[in-house]
Amino acid sequence: MSWESDWKKIESKIDRTLDQGIRATLFEVSTAIIKDTPADTGRARGNWQASIGRGATGVVSVESKGSGQAKAIADVNQTVRVAVGDLYYLTNNLPYIERLEYGWSKQAPSGMVRKNMQNFNRLLVKNIRAASK
Image (cartoon, rainbow, N blue to C red):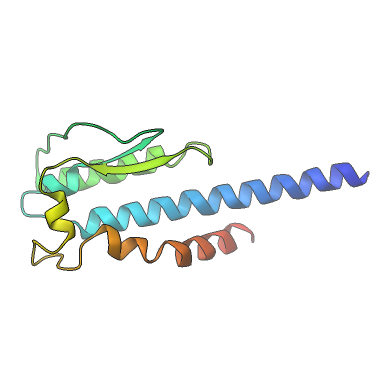
């Protein structure tokens, strides 16, 4: 075996490890944001929209409290499967989502996004370690 083919194998393993770690982290953080969003009717949780390249526009019609969360998490799961290197967005276009983020609801006085983004680096390291095994 040549040095070049050995290097390509190492490079491939690094790419796979980073890819898996990033995808797992995006899923975990996005899911935590969705679950931490206050749920009165389920509309706020159900309006988290995952997308690639640019943020989603518009709002989602939510049929019931539980269905919105389930759909939003399924959407995140599907979207994080894209190739790493693309720009990932988790968007909520409800007019009152910013108020919820900054303590308007007693259910989430410390918000959803800021709180979970504080864990991003720790989760990324954990997920990259797990993927490298």
